[in-house]
Image 1: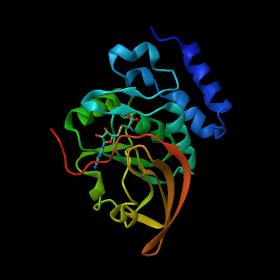
Image 2: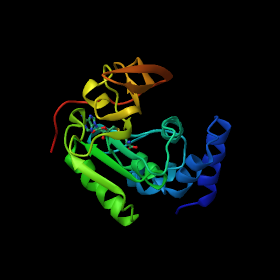
Image 3: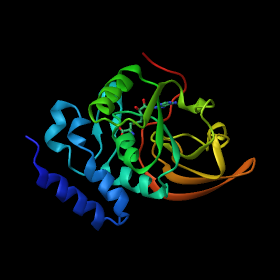
Image 4: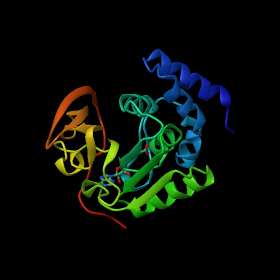
Length: 210
Ligand code: SAH
């Protein structure tokens, strides 16, 4: 059974690890992570660790989700694009913080399950798309913020172009074994990139499956 003290412990761990944005912490508190992990891992849902989900993918570590969410410096009116819905956990953490979250997933089965969770949790400001996130979502662009939850080998220029001027993307950049969460700010036809934290993510892949 779900034990609320586990979630409180996780929130304390996040604070201790340096997450002090109270809006981000309450967003994490509002999301039942146990709904986003496979049954076999339910008792570990509130451990600060990444866990396997279907299709060989992972639900990100809560600390990394909180870190990336805080790094986005979100404001209520913002439109956010997420590449890599996966379980939908990061999407659900973003949902209470902004106007709308557009999220793209390339594995049809994962997107189906995540969409069912959004419906059950009544996250009515989440819009999903099955597709290749490298293409972005040109019909809705520009976005104030973009978050990548899979690692791209280099900064994807196609996504930079879908940011507002001065808009920000937080995304792991690099090849497996050498990835860095990076802050990318759009400046006209170019961008500024700053490394934030070394990480391990699954790779962003071309095309779709399922
Ligand atoms: N935010 C997710 C993390 C899932 S792992 C969570 O918290 O559960 C990263 C996800 O990115 C995987 O589901 C993978 O299928 C997806 N992905 C990889 N490349 C992609 C692409 N080009 N477009 C869309 N999704 C992609």
